[in-house]
Image 1 (cartoon, rainbow, N blue to C red):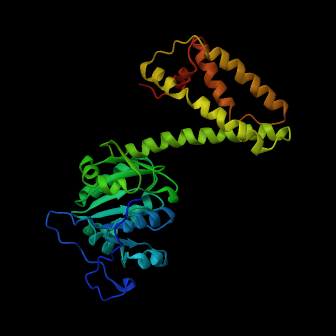
Image 2 (image 1 turned 180 degrees about the vertical axis):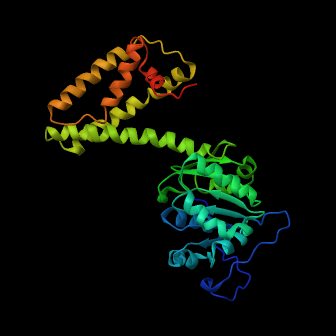
Image 3 (image 1 turned 90 degrees about the vertical axis):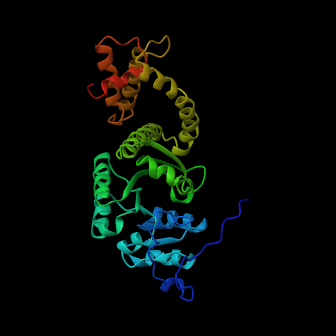
Length: 321
């Protein structure tokens, strides 16, 4: 077991109780404090866990939330409560924003713009690529370095091997704060375009929600025959795990553009899915979740690609190149 550094308050006035301490700005000497001080803006379920992770590893941690009471537990543990977002930003080397969306992030950060100069801003707010790019550009105008992040973890897995975070934007920030990023989950830098982390996020979540759609359809079919959801799911999970093993092969075909196959081609899958849709309707159920996939199969077959791999379905979805 690794022994963690003791939590510290990082106060300039040690005699005060933690709840009364006022965060003070670190001196700007061109060097980071050791370890760097961290401000966490936004103390929802994820933000509170992020702040606790830095406290656990000995970082002077400043916290701010519009509802101050959300900081109470963290202050008890040694965090410094800032009265304003600007005060939190001014008191830290590294500023982490974790709020509802990019609009909310800009709403909070705009009045604190002067405090951002010389700071490093990491935004782990969920969103889409263009707002991420806009926020990065705005941060640069304020003299701040910027990194955008997409977190793949439930709060209780932050800092464990089950968590990982994708980052895009400043590669220099990623390298400078790599040790601090490691505390949240395995960090991966995906590119200098600040919108890339969000784009990766949309891609990965699309796969997740597609799986959920298939799960709901599966349970509905089973339920129509009074089969319990737990019973069908106990069979579905190992089947999906086995099916997922085909994805790297499909990915290689898509990247190469070579869809030749001697096994499960589009013709075979179109017949199989058509049978599934017919049987589903016969059970009195809708087919809205799977019928669009059959349309994609039929489009490729109509173009003469029925003998090619199922992976060729992507060509009906791709943007024009």
